[in-house]
Image (cartoon, rainbow, N blue to C red; front, side, top):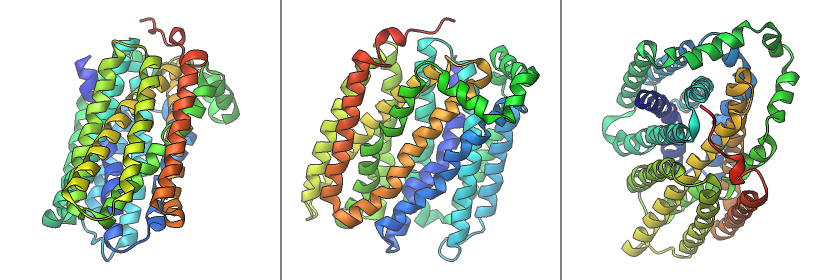
Length: 421
């Protein structure tokens, strides 16, 4: 089990690096250069490959092996970073855009392969909880490394040295995956061989509507689809816009890189880790019911800080506290959500499990992407206070949706029993 966790955690770590570069480093860089919040919000379009990944997920599911896909995509990320080291971001802004687009494309394909491996490797509620903790913690640790750590030192180390470091990181992980024994597991190999040998199911690649029917017919899928599209809406708006409010009124870019990119994300990792531990002891329905209510309360507190415009040590402390609590609860909710998604995907046929999980993960990204792209425009148009009232309303609505489902819907305890081993 420890080998599985290290393997998955490392792959999700390097997968989180492009997100950290784009979500933390790029907005601060653009805001410091005087760009509007609306324009910064539209940079989320660079995440679009994550929305499209469900289109090529059946190919990753049935062609080649998970090891080959993983080594190929991680090696591609290493080469992309190597070429990016020659760029000067001030003079080659479109080169930077191309770099992030290429990294998102490769990371999205890598995500399909590693998710498919995880679905095959993890069995039972205990392994699901710990495995999804490794997934979320690894991804967020990569995001912290790129968006917090590198943001704090980029002024000293420079753009080229930063991307050379990333090149060595990706190259090392590619070698680790190539020689690692985890993917020799019979469950994964059997799933790959089974999918490649079935001529009828292989023909589904040419008839994608059959795959879609199978995906939507999996028990629990309709509720899970609605949930993953909406569960982060209010939180995503607040997490995206509150640091930029602080940059305008209370913090420098370097302070924000440390407090939001490192400290707050550290709390997010703690929340994700705690989620895996709690899942081994309590039902997921009871956990989600309480955590979503706490998240709504934390957003009330954060929204109240928007009335303070004068810089002060007290305000800065309250801002750091609100970001830390928000990220902690967000990390906890993310682990619970990905466990719910994986449990739903394990009800599908083995030949479409990775495709089903990629389908849910794509919708999860789409829900966050669409709203975070529009959040800057909402703030520019209505102001921070009105926009955050809207974010709070969305968060409260999601809490009500989850609360109802724990009693009458897909989160009833008897529907989330441990999988047979």
